[in-house]
Length: 367
Ligand code: SF4
Image 1 (tube, rainbow, N blue to C red):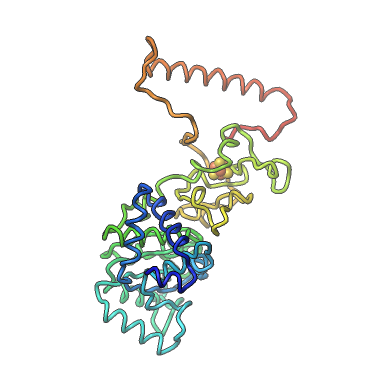
Image 2: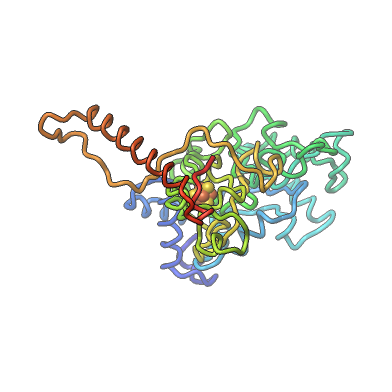
């Protein structure tokens, strides 16, 4: 986005830079890189984007467009040339189909294909048709000329709620169907618009795709569990759990694990980046994480079902230990052994305390 365009469209230079700083931080880059990211966004020769909608609620587009302050939707829309988007475009019918065809033809091999929604495959794909074509055929045809594909939202990434058992339409994610193109998954229900923006800006800045995890998600956004940075984590570690919605334990802001929070098994940056540009996310307003970035959790595990935690991750808020400085005659190993022994003693004490009738039912350790 050029500076002039930014000012014209109501996005101040300051907000534009703030957006680039936020995206730079999400990418895990040093602060100083934000100027390079901003330059890349400004000089971008607007890579063409074709955005297809299949089985979905349009919540991913809504989440992106409802964002404000700074107006990242404006940054996204100015950085990209959005040639086809069924929700945003003015044209319809034959006119819309023509613009889709023209863009695919003119930009063959160069456009970014963004897919929102799952793709039904059962019964020859008849459960979702746009312009007379099944979703499978539309996707396959558009994927042929795409330089890369971004599957935005959990439906496009893994199939979403449409693919939950018994999956009557045979809904699938993009990666289950397209095998010969680079595909980036930005899951979430909805995903953070910043994760989409950061992925695009990473591509524009470095001219390559970001490093992905085994589920095709950018590691910079989905590399850590939300549990690691959750503001309720001290309550989890201390064994203070909310046990019912609206009661004292809930009002006190205790950990939501016993209400079914899936945070300990969910990889995403929601607890850091948050939503709606006002610093909220589900857990901060009292709702357990539903694991919407994970293919095996969202709509597969009941919301109230407790996770079995096998490998609790340590909080990252402990003071750093400088293992390079050895105390007189005390090795790190010895310190560790003492620490474990101390921990066991404390744990035994805690268990003893727990057996005493304290009247505090809520201070239970997680199972
Ligand atoms: Fe936060 Fe959920 Fe982890 Fe509790 S279980 S600390 S509410 S992410």
